[in-house]
Image (cartoon, rainbow, N blue to C red; front, top):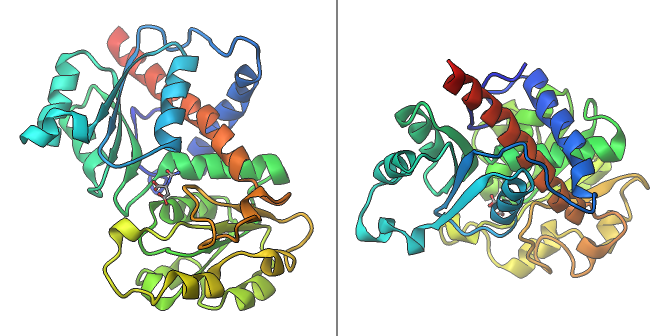
Length: 313
Ligand code: NCD
């Protein structure tokens, strides 16, 4: 049974809880292919989307998920809010509560911001849409849903995550989530982009060709180079990065026929992926995007059912 009013990260969820979200999301996919893609499930629920960092996919799929479920929605970007006038995050959130918002979807550069506000406003639901270098739970959930659809299971899947692991909240959430399903997770990147202690969580490679050869991954997940979080000098040049870690035709031809390539977006074509890799038959990148709406519908639905129970008391 689902019992949480917040979704902060996958580290704190059980395998059963993740399965509940994935099963609910899978059932919502059928609404998204109907002619009228709307159900009244969240009628009367107000969701504020608070985005303090840029976003295209996450923000639009949360907004669509809310609309598909008939919630009332607010969209707030840092640049257009009173944050630029000096208002703190906590004050912004308290004001949203005073406006009777039920759920806050938060993207913030500060790791820990969603947890902080979840504690500060205990009767408001909080969904982490990416906090700094910490977690991005709904991204990992949509990745896991995509894997489950493509392979019929997550258990035992071999997932190789390539690139800027150090700065990636997507990598962290995927590692936490996938390991609960006993997937065989490995990471590959240059030393400067690997977090300390990562070898206690999964196998680690610095050579991508060796990693592909040894791991024989079912899923090759490339990550964006997080230039906005980089200090200078973590690697020499984008061209060199591409040569060492870029997924091109030659590297993808060494994967098994059934293997897929994933990327959370936004893609830097010619850096993490060759110009045409994202458009190849192996690419599941746009399936991931589509699944983002169903996963966010599931999370909003499950959290709102807990909030409604609280209101009944
Ligand atoms: C990711 C993010 O913002 O963490 N993007 C996303 O949500 N799809 C990955 C990234 O920005 O590289």
